[in-house]
Length: 265
Image (cartoon, rainbow, N blue to C red; front, side, top):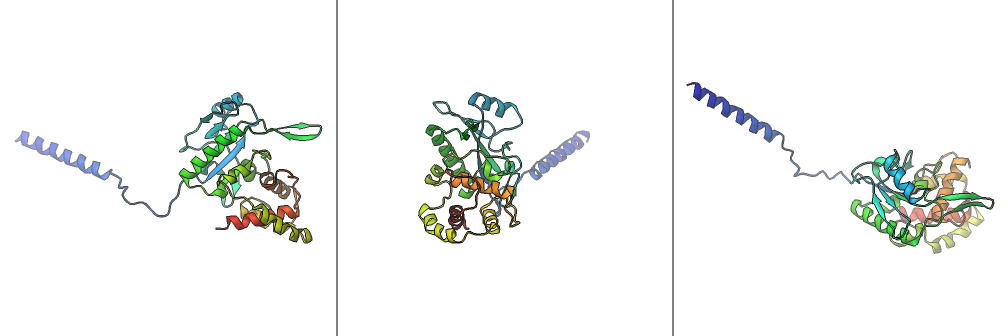
């Protein structure tokens, strides 16, 4: 009798374990329609230091990036943070309705010394073409895998215009546009529209509203203050790097309008 009772108890325990195991199974057969990739942005930076120092800083200090693109021949790319994890590269940042973009972006640091101040003014360092080729290939791969919107491939200066100038005016954004990666204001359309604004320049409030529609965080005061100037500089550095003094001129106004027409949903 004791043996039968023990067998019965053992059978009950096994049955309970099986039931518990079944309850722990997670059914993944149904996927919600309302979802998208966590990664929404690609942010490009320059390191402002040499390659060896860039590697050391980005791997041993609190600042980090998912990728580092070297500038020595042959150009090498390091992955320092897995794409599934957050890197600390964007800092306080904003674009459209997003803020603190570390959580929603892939950060790419590009080895480049940045700039030096000289008696003739600030001089920026150029990027080797082989390095740019690797950057374009990397951006194309990431943006394809995560279905990143072209208007969400950005400069650090786009998302933090009050404190960051990188990757600077010598970074060839037009090459990324020619590769189909980012929107670009058509030169013929800008040329056709520019005379209209030379006759009557939009007021500061119009510049602020339109730059905000593109994505920049900019005051909406109608006052041409330092913050507004810094945002215009960031825009000009990217789309008109030959002159980025922050002046809200006719060509800049035309470029803003043409670009806005390209990125309308």
